[in-house]
Length: 444
Ligand code: NDP
Image (cartoon, rainbow, N blue to C red; front, side, top):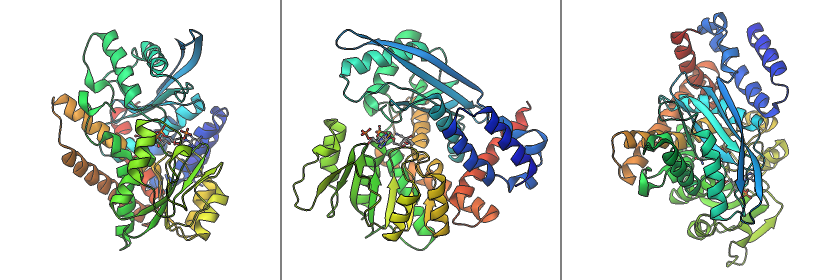
């Protein structure tokens, strides 16, 4: 390894000993940037790598709210603005009991390169809370969101920092958050948050964007190999926003999706999952996957089991980080899987990625494949600025074009610095080159 890279990694490790997930992401990204060191001497001269690994700012705050039994609850809120060299801080909010400063820092770090890859003027950020909206009434969620925004509003703004949704934060939460922001600042500043409902300032396709984008990315990878999605079978992990719309687009493009999951188990439907039934259960009724009606004889719900042991041509991890380990990767490959495209952020452990690479399995890294969400968020900001709302078909066509461009850029840089199918190196180098050029331009 290049000595500058090694020294930087050592310093990053010693300064971030309490942040293992962030270090995992840094340990995966930094070595892939090595080929850039010869071409961009300023990376070492201006110590850009170490600067890249240190967040510009981070906030940690107390969120106090009252539950329906009038008990006072206390949660933690976080917002990490990792980099604003390419534009205002931009990234989602996650409400889940597993949220910690480590998780938010890792997500925020990944977001820098993801946002850069879109080619748009967006910096990288992420935030959230250890609050769990599951099982909470609408009123409890509203009171929590209002309290969360009462602190967060000081740090955000349409030119400063623009949050959106992520795990546990859907249009309902975005509505409560925006409502409180509007109350506090006395302005109807639509561009301060994205992921809004299309009925009041949101963009068509934002809800579908991440999942659709994942499928467009997989389609582009297969097309580059002279192959297509049609007639293939797939497994998708998760049953939330990203998983749902990945399933929908896969089905539209002729793929049979035989399984999806949540944190308690997986659904196996060898004949194919019925999207309309799944959407009604998860999005409308907010029910558990175990309640999916087992109308056809061979459909089953498998408590405690993931989707990775089922035979399928394609796999789409769309739940959460580190959900797929080496043993899962081995099972997938033994069962004939040839493409893994990430809807979630960093869902594959490092050893799983190494195995896929050894086996020649096509791998679409999350920061490229799931960039459709942030890309349509940027389209939402454009529509807000112009006081417009574009038709569904127009936004979807723009999304597909953006994802194709991201794919092509990844492949071009992968060919230059590694091999054309090494999308991980392609995504990291393509994302980082824009960051380098802006950092150099701005001085220090
Ligand atoms: P949702 O909250 O809508 O859904 C998350 C799904 O993943 C649920 O089915 C949930 O199951 C499952 N899940 C969450 N945590 C775990 C866990 N620890 N173990 C097993 N299953 C788990 O979130 P999204 O669909 O929005 O996000 C999914 C992933 O996609 C995340 O990694 C997110 O960062 C990423 N992403 C999301 C974007 C977006 O636009 N929403 C954009 C880009 C990336 P359960 O209900 O049982 O908890």
